[in-house]
Image (cartoon, rainbow, N blue to C red):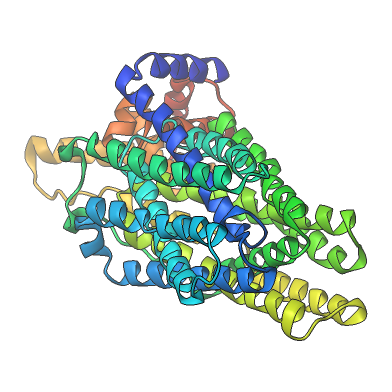
Length: 497
């Protein structure tokens, strides 16, 4: 089987058009620029964007930006159709309103006595900009073939983390701010340019997008809890100084490297958000529980563990959301916004908790330890309620693509053909049930049994070649076979009538 799939992959790579390769390269660069300024904003209370004010005021401004970020996602989810129809103009303008925050930093560094309201407005706009550019990139990835999406996102995240360090490590504030401004303009420009290169005929009209439940209430609470941990930890790390904030932001690269590994392995592993949750949870809980027991370097290590675990789940979430949107023709605005809103609401709550215990009612020692234990228990509880399992969601997505069963009651030759087709289908259903194939695998299995290849299956089921091959790999593994002919023999030998 491995040899067959490797040959298919090699031929598939050979067929990748040069212009599509260029698109993937530019997308990787643009996404790296996005991550660079996203991290610069996330850890801004101690870094270049907010270096002109003290940590208390800087943390408050960051919390303001997160509130408008979450609000923007909620509003976009509510008006998803209108936003999609006007996406290019809205996202380009919305993303560029991040520049006033950079300009505000320049002015505050150069002059004294600038009204606080100017900073407040600019950082409220920054939240709108963050939501806009994130949605712009998600929509773009949701409208292009998914063959290299996971690799693009993962490599872009690694590059973006390095850019974040580069743009905030210098002692020259104006140079740092200039680099962040370039990240913003570059990411917006590449997203807009690449979006115009998508052939209009490949973009579905609003009414043709499928809709499905994005997150259940328990799942939303679980995502919100993880966001709360991130919000809490970023404010805590930033309160320890710019070097710690820089290390904290850079530590996410460890989680991104794991996400890149999953992307490179492709169909050889079956990774979804359920597995990612299980991988991330122990690291997340360990970081939370150990945090109050250390000082200095120990706290930095614990914070880095949390950031790395959350970076891993965030990047895999980006990949799976974009790929599912394309494969299953799901509404990209509706789905992405509804996934991001709970996470950012959680971030807002976690950041406020950190702000209160740092600057309003300072906690330390036993009190801080008890708070972190409660934090960890809430995260575990929400994970248990959610179950960390998105199998039901995957089944619902699979059902969206399952073709309807024809009801042919005509007689004569047509009836005979229908009878033969029905008999063949029963044999396939017999094998599918015997080997425990999922509903999605059953449809792929049926086409394989008819002698169809991976390319035909991908076109017939409106999925990428990579997804089709992934299903084929899992079917071969369940049946313990290594060829399509062996599969067809199993169907032929099935005794079910």
